Length: 268
Ligand SMILES: NC(=O)c1ccc[n+]([C@@H]2O[C@H](COP(=O)([O-])OP(=O)(O)OC[C@H]3O[C@@H](n4cnc5c(N)ncnc54)[C@H](O)[C@@H]3O)[C@@H](O)[C@H]2O)c1
Image 1 (tube, rainbow, N blue to C red):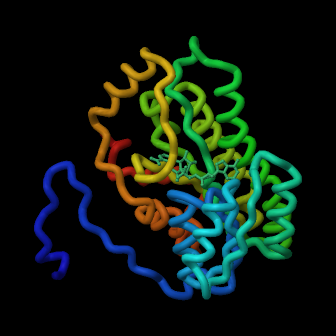
Image 2: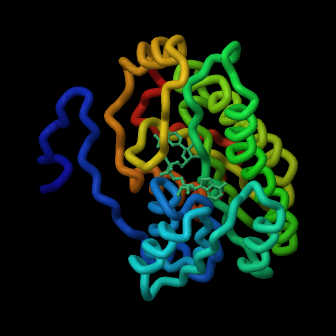
């Protein structure tokens, strides 16, 4: 059925969409993808691999990476169990990628427990910042010198709806994703003239394995109220479509952008 004949989606429903591969889009390119064992990272790593790229698939979970590799036999995938908060592990990721790094998709991240700042524990704050901010920064810091040697490279970081508003999560996650936006824009500004592009996606709700807990009655009440306008969660493939666009050469003129991939939630 052509688009012209498709029935209009019900109000609030996500329009039907089928992934269409752009074969060879990543041929000859090496792309590091963190969080490749699950959710948005897995979908992105998968799409790059199926479009001909060499994927350095990074996750802390051996089991998830084993499953990913088994599902992509015949593709050029090197799986690496590595924690992005660990400098030695980051060095291993860069060494595995080799002399040319065409893309870096910083997708690994964790949620908080929706706690407002007055109830914040140091443990939650530090854990969320360590993964979402320190991990993202450490990989950028390590990959950019390699990208500068070839004068090209595309980095896509993962922000969130929580980077655009105060009502989508607790204080730690919200602040960490705002920090990802700052890192993205600063790096785009600094290295744009050297040929690098640095952008971020801000996903709305996506069906993945991410764990969101409610550790505070106030946080639960406030965030759940704001979720009344939540769009229908989408499959991770829909985010991979946005991320691979920014990673690919089709993103040629896009640098320092924060692309809301949220079905329009941020426009509400
Ligand atoms: N799912 C959503 O609705 C949503 C919305 C907005 C933003 N995001 C962001 O998208 C990104 C991916 O989330 P997801 O929903 O796909 O989650 P997910 O939990 O399904 O996948 C995240 C993966 O990252 C890995 N990981 C966690 N910490 C790591 C570390 N220190 N080093 C290496 N790997 C690590 C996990 O093992 C997991 O496989 C995150 O940055 C998240 O904040 C998700």
